[in-house]
Image 1 (tube, helix red, strand yellow):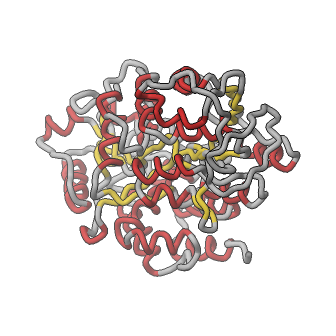
Image 2: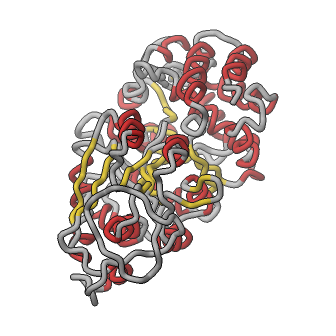
Length: 458
């Protein structure tokens, strides 16, 4: 599963143009910059330098539509203060738990917001196809070139045109564990997949189930298992093969995918390895993903593969730190030739209007200034960005710091969650369903064949 948002804007050039609050969309879409003219309220301040070009935006408002809800919403809104101080513009924030569905409805009805934080590249492509999303202005493109990798910019690009800059991000390639358990038993964080299996075998020998897992998630049951497979494909076959597989240039039931799923099966379908604290292999399908890793706290299992956002699932009072009750390590690779693959998710900022205030807000959100303001506005932790201008010292949570370090590692090869890029019939349908069936006994060949046959013809 994935998350985040993308802003996209265009303009008519550096010449001043009138700013209005009509929100009627449109724009030249050429990546130019629009200015309201006048002197920006924050002119002369270092943090406002890039925003001065948009002029005095006092009295204007930018509407933002997102799936980011309380309690996270407050930190988002607090992080916009510098933008308002620099430009004079205000931000009207609207969160919705029906975001994915309602955004498309609003766009079709001609009621699109100025900005939407879009959590899936596939949804971005859908709204871009409506013709209402405008290209990002040049300052946004420049910021993404400076602070993000090419892979991130690619996810905000559709048909060769750049629309949406990354916002927040999450690392999925993590394994949660108990630092105390590892220390007491003389185990060190594994650097290779084989090392990880060796530790697993040592746990078995000591009467501990090395792995616990849960993939139950209501109508989305199965999605954690898709993450397992995506991580395995990245490690076994590399990023290029992964891209071809996600785009269906390689069949879903290709032998390379089958090998990767069998690699996962060596853990998740191994009766000796799972399901610590819950039962047998079949219990993985009925264990809520929120509960999947909790047996680690009782010493009933040793490891749990889940994303950085799982930090929020530990009970209140749990010390989530390198020397605490629980922490995470990078899921080791199986093939050094494939670099350091990192599976993750995030939001992208898409714009439906190119008024100066909208372009200015896009520019702010794509900058290192905003990334650090957002970190400071989130003292409780639970947020990170792949923006390399983010000062890791501004993050308060150890797991957030580890995530940022993972993103900023020069050897990291980032790839977005595969199911979030696939057609919904597969990524949010057969892929989830068949991974659940696979856990409960279906063969690798049958599961992958069924997914392949479900891929839409066009």
